[in-house]
Amino acid sequence: MYEIQNAERLNVPAVSRAKLEYALNEALKKIDYALPVFTELFPSEASRGSVYEAQSNLTSGGWNTGFWSGILWHAYELTGEKKYRDTVLEHQLPSFLERIEKKLGVNHHDMGFLYVPSCVAAYKLTGSELGKQAALLAAEHLFSRYHPEAGFIQAWGDLDDPNAYRLIIDCLMNLPLLYWASEVTGDSRFADAAYTHYQTTRQVILRPDGSTYHTCFFDPVTHLPEKCVTHQGASNDSAWSRGQAWGIYGPLLTYLHHKDPSAMEMFRETTSYYLNHLPADFIPYWDLCFTDGDGQPKDSSAAAIALAGMLEGIRHMEDADPMKPSVSGAIACTMNSLIDGYLTKDVPQANGLLLHASYSVPHNNGVDEINIWGDYFYMEALHRMLDPQWNPYW
Image 1 (cartoon, rainbow, N blue to C red):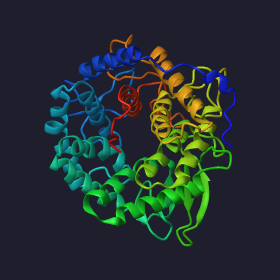
Image 2: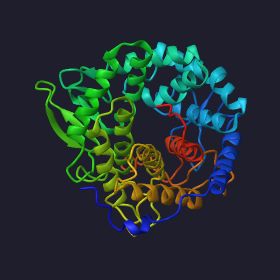
Image 3: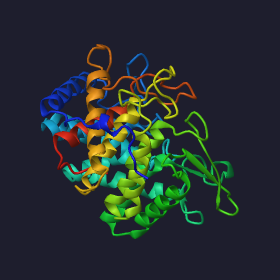
Image 4: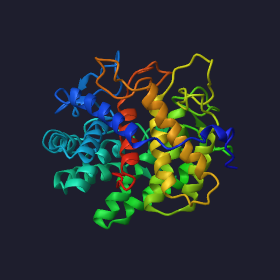
């Protein structure tokens, strides 16, 4: 079931520490270049002409501001430079608290993306009580979107809207906020909801061949799955690359908190499918149905997410696992490709890290640009490879 095709191309040595340190140095140059603008303001979700515009956390309404704070936390941990820490603690965390207190732009499930790399990380790294307070309020809000009758957290829209009664694969990445909330409060309802949502997602999103659907609608009367489709992929039957990457990393975040073997099984299935559908340079096009010669945009952010996920997954694989050498090789191939061909170092105006990301090709949004979650997961992957003992914010 987990057969890797052309596995010999993954037989490469690990990325050298010198190359990783070079990549980190290039990333820090861009972070320092962007920092004066993005101190109290945040990068837009995707660049225009390789330049992020500035946005307020209180008016953006998006799901992405936490990633910039997370990038700064990685920079702080990797360098010890207090300017990164102080920027988050003094200039950014207050806006996260105000945003959740006033419920500004939070009619969605992405509280984990917003509050884990920013506020939970702040609490874990510095003991920030403000970070803890904001993240717990965000966890309560995320829990309020849980439908116990159907066993899932609603992705978007008003909770009484029957046309919005659905989950999406991305939410697997939001669940750590609920697991963390149970850990710090002792209240099991958060973790119970998260685990049930994981189980429901696995049942409806994962196809027999290891590919994934993006979203699944439920019947608001029977609470049973109704139809699984795509919102950002090429077709309802294809595998949207970033969604597949969420399907690689997301189950592991449940495995970290709830040692369900099915989560590792899902990781193996989704990773196998992903690796079997990569082009020559190991960076996927925006949907895994496309390959070299199709003339389609790449999505380096999907590669960065999958890379971070594989780095977590390999931590939990036994040495005798026959799939482990392929995962190890895929990690090296992906990071080498990102460093060699996707960095913004030769684009002077660029204020992000990775070129050739695509937010949403069907909606013509952020196509072949830089996007902030791609930058975040690239930084996380660098951190993981430079410090294999790193303690995840998730």
